[in-house]
Image (cartoon, rainbow, N blue to C red; front, side):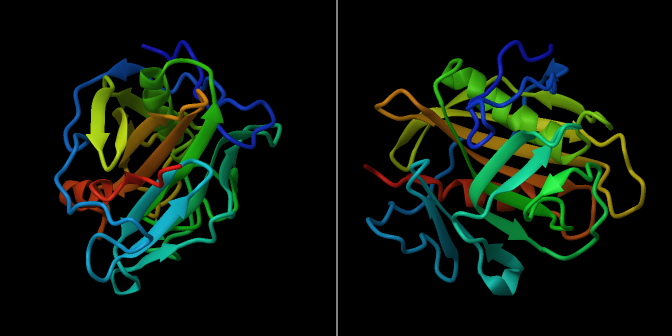
Length: 243
């Protein structure tokens, strides 16, 4: 089933994600439900020893990723990662991001990458949103599907996408929804490009009515790819920044 509504995005000039038609069908997914984690600290300290904290006051998300020794890197909060259409207009944009195993194979299934996107990392995580269009459930699905679509082929090399039904997410001071996209890559110009990928989203709504998303997209089927357990642990650290 194709997307009927677009998601809420930031810095695209329109305030909303474009409807990419990324979700071709729906399928149940595993690994995207809420996970137990230590109680959220009141400051920027990571929940797990040795991890790094990233936060976005704009989107009211804080989360942690493993340390540099485990090949994780947090980017400057204002660095924008984006994939564009044939006219150079952003399809998706995220900030307050982090990369896993940056600098590996640089070949990308979608060469229309901007900023630090598509530079050979095996996973990327960040925040997006800011609009009021659609429901929170729809935005959870759209963020998962649209990032899978954009990062793993885009309109020129459309990947096959299956997006789960959104599930409630009540964790870390966030009451929202989560969704998962399973991606099959159709454009593999070299072995650098993974055969498949997974995308998880968490969507929350602020008191002003704007909706904001946290997204992780990760290569699968390649050496050193993140496991479901590793992804779930990162998701367990996602929490609200508060007011």
